[in-house]
Image 1 (cartoon, rainbow, N blue to C red):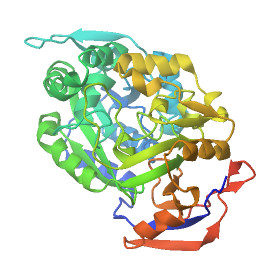
Image 2: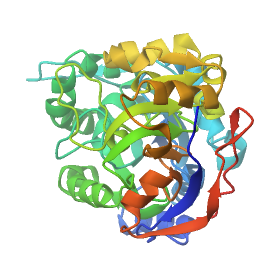
Image 3: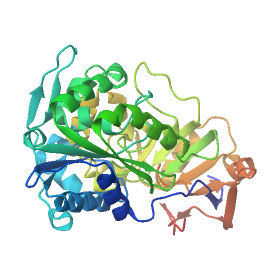
Image 4: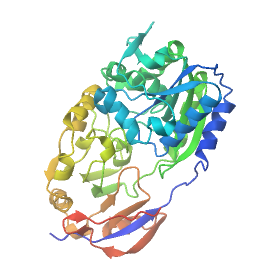
Length: 415
């Protein structure tokens, strides 16, 4: 098969970022004028998202709360992730560098929850037992467009109140309503958690297109509803994107829970695969290949069903228990279905080209990315380059073969 040659290109996005993360976190907490009584047990809620500097943000939060007289500890706030087990959730945090030795505080991981008064709500409300028994809860989470729905509030502090802190029970309670639950129940349920769960502060993080914190903002809980939508819009404007709206084949080197909650960001690839939900208008990608699963996913391959082809290497890393716990909680079953399995990346591309329709292989639009967070540098085929060359890009080097034998060549990122 005549596989086209590829050339590396660099895309340019807004590079604004927080230069001194520890100082920014400290200043934001102090400027919030939060009151911490001496000896207060403060639960720091941390999720399963792979935020690049989350360990630094958490450590600075711990240190600042200690300086204010509190006795902080970590609670995993990640719904059913980590295989819906206390040990699995603790291991997820540790894989992000959030260890007790590094942060200087204990991690209290449990799947036990307390049911809070639901009052007029149609759904039940839960909160992590350790968090509920603390003297106050501080949430730390990234604010960004969600992978399942779009509304004025998506991924962020309010969602963490409900699904993250609610553990498996809380996540299942909202997800059983499908997308309706995500769109319509999170805000009202978060208000109950704030009212009855002693939430005292939230630290919202907005990242730039290079996966770096560009905004770190501490908010009092009464301000979540007003401030979070503003930060969501900033996050939306600064998301990275693929340089073409029509692509024949997209090769993704790796997927994983540390990259996105669904392993592959649906906002980037234009695929939701949620029954009853309209698919994004762009980009339109005929075939998607995923070559590997990150080690930090611990075998959770949620999102694998968004691909058309995967490699044997990826398939053999899948922990089906962890994956199924996650997808059964979400109810979006398509996302865990297994695509066609190829023996290696080169064969996966051959399979993809064979099924793209009546096209000439050497004139196909093919783009290779490291993952859906890393879109600063890409490998593109000549046809793809011809169609994006008017965009703001820089061409790096010359055309070359994409494969070393049957495996993909290395990246040598320098963004």
